Image (tube, rainbow, N blue to C red; front, top):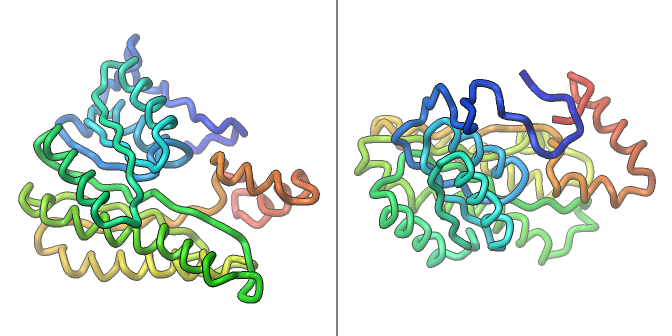
Length: 243
């Protein structure tokens, strides 16, 4: 069940024992790499994966949020590794894969969640902004996926989950560069699924609408009337509320 509360941190206490450890552990024995794992959707994925029994590598450019995620794991007896990484840099991406294998011996799941968003029409979008959004959202997803495939193949298969967006399916007002990048993620996902399905490597993408992450809250706060803009965006969602 989705949580309609405005809190940025979901309550995942259902199905947990007294120590906060999952009673289900569907992911016991699995190793997951999550980019953009320090805040927002990536952090929620990391915490939930840990409580389901997975060992998790969280990667992000800034180290501070990653340390907080690792501390959450330690509270419930989980095991996590924090690695700083710029997903647009091939060498740094190769290093997070090496660090994952060195620490945990394998890789089963990749969540490409690192991303960035800046609003703008075509006229408002500079060359630098266009390049920046495509580099982080599209090229970063490509680089991490490309580096991960050989390890997933050695493991006999695995799962790559790319974080796209509804803007990657339908576009959106003042989201020219972002929509272009996420549209690329969506179609790249389809192509990779066709390329690697026979190797038991599943490639899927999630296309969320507006979700109450710190990044989104920052964007909402920049509006002339944040409350009115929030209400307008929520009204555009079939359920009538932000994720």
